[in-house]
Image 1 (tube, one colour):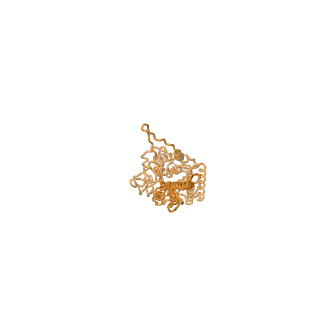
Image 2 (image 1 turned 90 degrees about the vertical axis):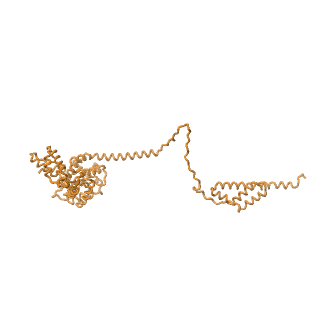
Length: 453
């Protein structure tokens, strides 16, 4: 009735269905293309090649390309939609892929940027940034060096307090023929007196025959240290005087122990190192030697560790004389190797007398030659104001007994007979009777105890 054909309404109803059929495959194709593109971007080159070689992947790409070419064809869209619904052609893997390892990622090396300068300008090196760590390190090194230098200076100041250089010069000037012994004594004293903290006391033993200068060196040490540390910190002990034969051995032990204990205690309070010189040690009884050796141990309180002991004795004199006469050479003084050999043979003999010589510093005094004895006469005559006539000196020196070995003459009694011989010469020349301080026996206060015969 309205002039429209009967079939026009049916055609109008079919249009929306056709549009919906066309739009659904397009959306699916776009969605699948995006998903495939995202998967390709996330895969490594090896996995991408595997994915491209898979036949199912190739079929999927072919279907996508066919779907693009025939978008207007309804039958193609329906076919492609039906093919996507089948899982045998394409499925999505929902399993979680393992994270890519660091080794699979490509490492990029950082290259130092190259600085290009214009040809018309001058080239300057870039300014270096100042490091605070380097400054702190230099400051720390400076502090450590200053502390080391300050410690060395303190050690030198402590040695200067005892004036050991002056003592060494005095000993070289007044003691003849004992150069090696003097050097050994001074080395031990300088090393010990450099500090006030010690783990053991210094014990030096003077061993040798009579008349070679052992007691004279002890007297020089006592005189020097009295002027440096004071009379109250120097104890000169003579066995014949302090512990005679009629004295009780127990009383001698108690007296010596009390004297040493009081002196080291007072010295520790005033921060000084006392000096104990014990002469005629070979005359001490075994009990007195045992009492003395207890003060040489290391397991004592601090005040007993800061002390210097000088032991003077004739123990081992035969070993020293025999060794010297068997190893006479033209070397003067003896080489260090010979002295070490002498010490190795002397220590067992001394330890056999008493074990205390096993842990003391032994300084052997060797025999004096005829020239040294003549020097003794010369010094004694000069000290008494007598003209040292060379003929008189030669006459006096010729009266002594000598060991003749290898063309060299060694005095059997050293300079000990020089004082009596000079007294005889002075009596014959009508000089007043006198005794001389050198190589004589001394009392505790340093005064001579000998008398002219």
